[in-house]
Length: 450
Image (tube, rainbow, N blue to C red; front, side, top):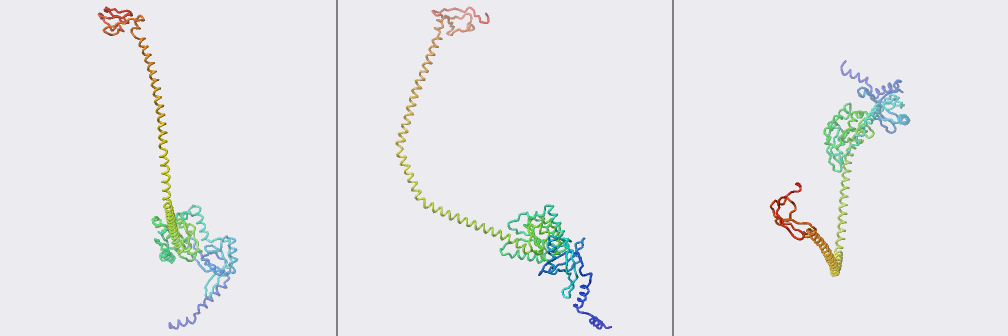
């Protein structure tokens, strides 16, 4: 058969896509085993729009963490109100992403919108999903180890300008961050340095840890670290719920800002970072705000200094004017007072001199009287002493001694008081009360020779 005829034959047998999809619809939508079936899965990217709840149901390999199954699912608004209320009352949490759930589903295939699973019931006793459980366990472990708040307590510089950025180089979030930072309306200057890392997939945590290690080696060069990533499905953020990564950021030596995903997205890193913001743009806005606050504070201080200086100058001028106005009257008052004092002194000089002379005259007369009395007393004492000496001289004179029956022996004009003073042959004169006698010494004998 010619080739053209062959293709013509096939074309005659081909059906439109809508017809083929209709066959799938008839096959799937009416298969009993695909209707009202309980399924275990994890929720991801849960969103409520106009009362309807849209999500992805995923399944991961428990060993590798790689997603091995994924399907779109929804809960119609009239059903979601009751299911969500019941789920919240049992689990204490609103139905959201990252939960391991058991749901009752029915396959629903539409020719235009494709395959979706329609959820008609949720088993709340199946509790939180594996992602939430893992996150909770990581947070509890960091809390037990006492490190969960360490990065939050680090001091911030007044204006953080030297910024280490961890992001994918070509990511839209990084571009938004840089654009916001560089085009700030305050003209603030920042010094960003990019440390590239994978921000999606299984290598996310090791890649960010490597970047943190490089930053830590030069931590003195930076004021803070910014970890940023744009939005995406919630399941793409699972890599950030990592214990080693969270522990490293919690204990990092400089403040860390985390801006991952959208405002609705929360990861373990949000619990340990010094600052959590909702987007990369918000991270830039936070840094700009700190800078603008510092500028405002400087402006306030400058204005306060100017105001204080003006007040001091004004007060000084007022004080100077006051002093200038009172100088003449003060000078006159001082001169008048001095003149009065001088007149008083002039009037008092004669009286003071007279009083002083009278006082000195009285003192002089008193001293003259004292001198006269002292001289008389001394003369009396000396006369008494002389009389006593005269009596002693009279009593001790040789004549009185001779009159009492004693004799005095003289040799060569010296009184002899000891036998050793004489030698045989010496001529001595002995005086008595009524005369004297001369004699020659025949011999001498001491007291010891008796």
